[in-house]
Length: 235
View (cartoon, helix red, strand yellow):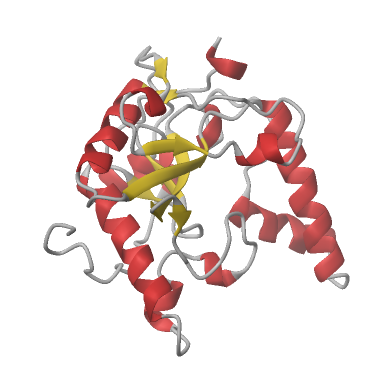
């Protein structure tokens, strides 16, 4: 069984003052593969499976992130595991995702202006540019996309990975839970409380996205970000 409190409702997304977040003070921490620390952590290589250019065949994350994921995995009941969709992301993959999402939004909302499309995109994917002062989360090695599995099967979270609707917002099912979605709501709660118990923070627009040491973590904790941009594949 999970520790007590892991079904606590997900709180509303807090107000975040991004203007007060300082530039990253890169700590020089290395990259490691979290699947090597626990047999309860698997890598699904979501973007490699999609054939996106530059997608990696292994998962790399900062050392502190991998250790926290191993701590989280150790709290899982028998038969449960973590499935990682994505970790460190090369800019070539960021570019492919950005263009893919943009095409979907334009197709689904043909009346949207270019500015409106950019605004929608901003909720789900960072621009594919090499920014040293404000690096995209996945280019730092401090962000991870993941879900929970039971007996090797991903749990129902109410939407799939990389869903572009408001239903992907982490606390969506706390406020608008249709009949029959109670299990998905509880699964999100389990993932949220498990990840936050080891010091990771969630990006409120994506139930699958958690981070440590980068700008989202900094704005939430009031600390300075310690992870800056990393070159592709950690080199």
